[in-house]
Length: 127
Image (tube, rainbow, N blue to C red; front, side, top):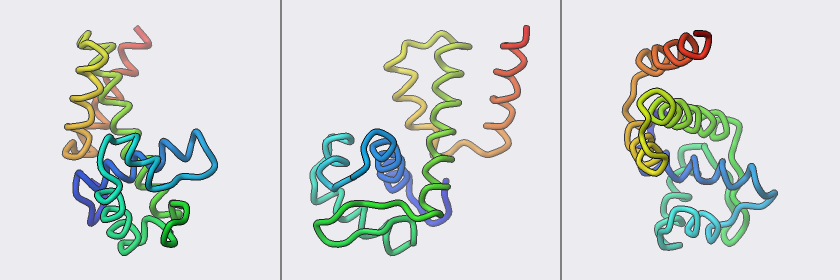
């Protein structure tokens, strides 16, 4: 987990990152739609992320990840991708279930275990 972030805040950070990859402007409304939550919930999370230095946000303005926020979001997304790939390609788990399980586990997996999964997937791909 990113330093000082709960699993929920990591989800918000990842959502902002993913939306920002598709469009130049990210707003509270976009994150609420992406995560299927209320805008008030997003606003509270945005406030907490901004207080911790992961995000810049002016009231009613766009959401912009700081350098630290971008780095943390990329790492969260990487963990998710590795787990989802492992579940789908190695274990043969259905895509929806693999996505959901990756979302749940990405917050608690250790760096060591994640690295071992990456190495395992790479070995399988070379075979």
